[in-house]
Image (cartoon, rainbow, N blue to C red; front, side, top):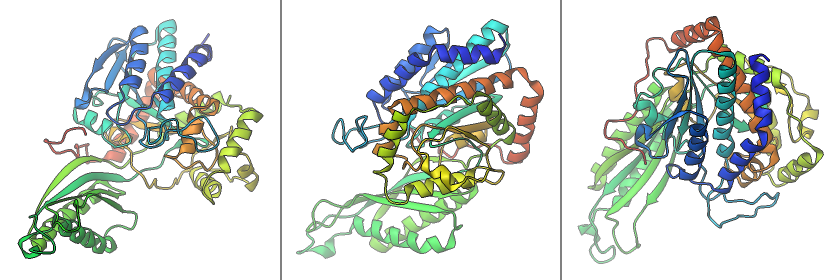
Length: 473
């Protein structure tokens, strides 16, 4: 058998085992930096297969790196994730039914995410052993993607610096390479400190920390007109005081500042720091800025993106049953109005094909779509982007939930724990393993990916956005 046959056979033979691992992680959801169950399950499975395991990358106890191949060149990395989201506990049901009220759930499909990368490296290991293919493969156990912490702090530790390429994926509603960019981001809290006083009797003796928060937010709102139009600034007041008749001595506001380029985020952040100081001066309070994390904009690699598409089209074995389609339609019936149309429109922009309206009637897309040469900008952020500025990186999406499914929703949880999600996971594992094998054996292909990466990055090497004092939280 050739390498492709070995890889596909290996994953087909272990499909039940991989599906069980994904379901076990789904059954035991844990939020960012608390993913002890998933991290240990994945790491133990890799250790049993002969991978060397190291823990604690980036100062996070649930981060690990699994390596096999003896350190030979080239080195190909696979980025696995496994954190859940708070408040999305859900049964395998097409109606909203929490397992645990207020509990976490896998509303972004990370129970599938890490498991597909596990399946990919194990299948690739089998092919390398059988055919004496040289090289090194690494599984990166990346916690806390949802808070944009994991890979950013791992990158600061330099764990991706010697990679020749990185592959990853994400659950979605179609089978397509995601070759667009995303927004760079800073996450930070601003703490205001004032003076408590009786709000009715002696308010002139107090200095309201909440006034500082509110004036800062007003200043940020005036700033919005003067930042790039694709920028996004979100805030939430996490602490505003304890009682109306007490002048608040402490208040806190938490911001996400996003923009298409890292340099734009840094400029916006500097301006917001000035606004914070101005608000403190106006209110007679003191402010401190607590930087949590930051990430880059995604730098896609078209050479590896084209490779992923080629391998997706070669696998092309995703088939859903009528029972799965019925379940998907039931989930779609619970979506907010217009969700399916929005999902369809997004996919129309993300592919190079014209999708007929009839495609909207199909809740589960089995086909493989070629990615668009001009993909839309993703309005969110990902710390996969930080890896993409360190080494050539590409990622794809596979069908794990119905068309139009809102990410971070109970409907996504209800699908990622089902056989629908498992089929998308296995498809992703096969594609990544085949692509990883090609990068190991085709030196010219890998050289082309590196040349594109260096040209795209230009004179702007990766510099961590994290200040020295930042710690994962």
